[in-house]
Structure formats: C-alpha cells, structure tokens
Amino acid sequence: MTSAALPASSGFHPQRAALSILASLCVAFGVFLSGFVINEPAPYELFLVVLIGVWALFGLRLSRHIAPLIVLYVVFNIGGMFSILTMDAVKQTPMYIAVSLFLAFTAMFFAAIIEADQRRLLLIFRAYLAGAIITALLGILGYFGAIPGGEVFTRYGRAMGAFQDPNVFGPFLVLPTLYLLHGLLTGTLKAAPLRVLGLMILVLGIFLSFSRAAWGLLAITMAMLVLVMLIKERTGAFRLRILIMSMVGFVLLVAAIIIALQFDQVSELFSDRAKLVQEYDGARHGRFARHAIGFLMAMEHPLGIGPLEFGLMWGEDTHNIWLKALMDYGWLGFVSYVTLMVWTFALGFRYLLRDRPWQPYMMLALIVLFGHTIIGMVIDTDHWRHFYLLMGVVWGCFALEARWQAKPERRSGHDHAGRISRRRPGSARVVTSPGAP
Image (cartoon, rainbow, N blue to C red):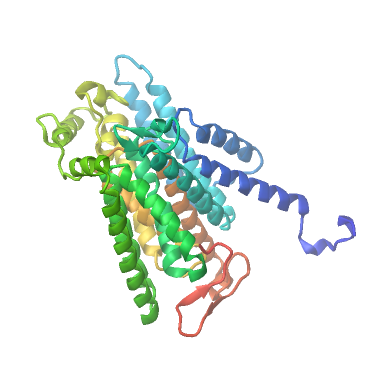
C-alpha cells in the first residue's frame, strides 16, 4: 500500500517520524560526547554547535515556559560583556564570554527539545550513563597504570578520565550514579547485577578523583534521593525496600573504599585529601581569604573586574561560583544568576513529588543540580558542561508540567503518549511510560 492510500486522518508521516528519530539519536550522541573533554574546543562543543544550528533552521521552538531560563541567562552574559569594558586590556575575555553564552544556549536547547518530546529524557540519561561509564573506566585504568599511556587520564596522582580536571571529572559522574541507584531501588532484580557493576565503576571513579567536592556532592545527593523517595512512596513495603537497599549499598560502598585503601598510593593521597581544610584553603591568601577579599572588591566594582582577572590578580581563581559571578559578570550577572537559581529550586521543589512520567528524571536532575549549587561555595561551576545540561533537563520538565496543567483532559491520568496511570495492588501509583528509568 502506498502512502497515498493511507487515510488522511491517520496522522502518520513516515518521513517526519524518521527525522524525529534521527534528531533524537543526534541529541543522545551529543550528550555522550560530554564525557570526553580532554582538549578544547571539545567534540561536545563542535557537535552541539552544528546540531543546534541545524535544529534552529528546521524548527527549534523556544516556548514561554522556558522564558525565565532564556532571559536570565542572556542577562547574566550581558553582565559579563559589561565587565569586559572595565578592563584595560581585553585579552581572551571575549572568547570566555562567548563560551558562557554558548553553554547557556545548550541549556535552552535541551529544555526546548525535552518540552517537544519527553521521551528524549530516556535517551539523554542513557547516553550520559554510557559516556560516564567509559570515562570512569579510563580514569580508573589510567590511575592504576593498567593501559599504555594511561597517565593522560590522570593528573597530580588523581584520576580525571577524559577530562582536563579531576574536580570536574568527579562531579560529572554523580548524576549517572544516582540514576543507577534509583533504578536499583525501583527496578527489577533481573537488571540489578548490571546496575551494581555500573555503580561500582562510577563510585570508584569518583573516589579516585580525590575531589572533596565530588565526595561531598555524592554524599549529599544520595542522602537527598533516599529521603525524597521515602517521602514520595506511600507504601510501607516499598519504604522498607528502599531502606534495606540503601543500607546494603552503603555497606558495599564502604567495603569498596576499604579495599581501595589497601593500595599505598591510594591510602596516602586519601589521608591528605580527606582533610577538611587544606593548607591552600586556610593560608593567609588562601581560598577562604580570597573569598573575603573578592566580596569586598565587589562593593567597589559593581560592573565586575573582567572575566578571569581575579585569578591573574591573586594567583588562583575564585573557587566560588557566587564570587565568580560578581567578579566576572558584575552585579547584573550576580543578581540574574541568583534569581535563576532561586526560581529553579522554587519551581523544582514545588513539582518534585507530582506523579508524572518525567518525574524520576526531574527528581534526579534537580537533586544533583541542588548539590552542585551547594558545592559551588568552594568550587567554580561556571563552565561545567554537565551543569548546563542539568539546568536544561530541569527546565524542560518544568515546561512539560506547564503543558500538562494547561490541558485538563490530561489531568485524568493520561500522559503525552496516551498511556494511562494505574495502581498495582499493594504498590505505589505507577505511570506506564517509555521514559521510566
């Protein structure tokens, strides 16, 4: 039967469906590339520039539901442009702001394509997981010298995978770690062995990064995930399962760390990195002293002092995202950034427990984003690619929620794919969806 013989009311367009599948696979490949950033510009940037450009030509839609994300990120970068005007020599700062603006565009892009089709969330998370597993293995094998030339995947005796910095490599692995943990707590026993294996690889990668920020981020987000799930799930049996699985996971985690500490190179570096305050933190012009100096400088320089100038002035960068915003983007950038974060978490925690097909994805991304905001007090997350991906995922889910609320017929239990929510006997409410992790 030819396509002309199909009834006009069928609404099926093979070419459009094929293009949609191809576009979604391209998105997944782009997310996968985010785990490989040894050189800049990284393949992630080059691929996303082309992908966003092509998508814009063929109908990328930015709806009003993600308008706050768009406006506040644009204003944030305008603050950076004003900051450049205060500098005696421009240096490489236009490129720095260009990268900031591009990363902001990636957040808008991910939000828009998720709003267009919530099924892309599954592809995004799986692609992220695949990239994270591979880059974690590279970091682990490189750390133990198990592969030729493995030293390229380490720095200062710390695993960094296919990244330039262990302090970015470690936090990058946290979202897929929580994704596997969530699947372990809610999924079937059949898939549990693979999830446990993936968890062991990712957690070992985080541990061998020797990033205190990554360690803290993992601890905070795991605790938040268990807490949120205990609040959300109403059945006693499911809550008991969560508690038991969490305890087993904690015991396995401790056991893995104890085994790793049997290696001298691991135990020596761990004993040094485990100190809460390092010498370079509490020194006369250490990290914390520079924070105080920087906030005082902000009172005298409302437009900022120019991107990257603080590091040149004091020998070390700000290592604080809030101070970074003040110094590199001025008060205009700082206020817009604070507004964006407050807006994001206000909406996020409001929608967190609602029973939606995309709820698990929003929950995981929001928790990890919140954790990144906390560690932003001691580390600079300004150009972390996965931070903008998290922001895009969260705002894409906000847009899905807004669309859901705008159509009353969907409140009766139907999701975007026409599937119906139902209850299994003796269990929490389940939403059948192709996007459930």
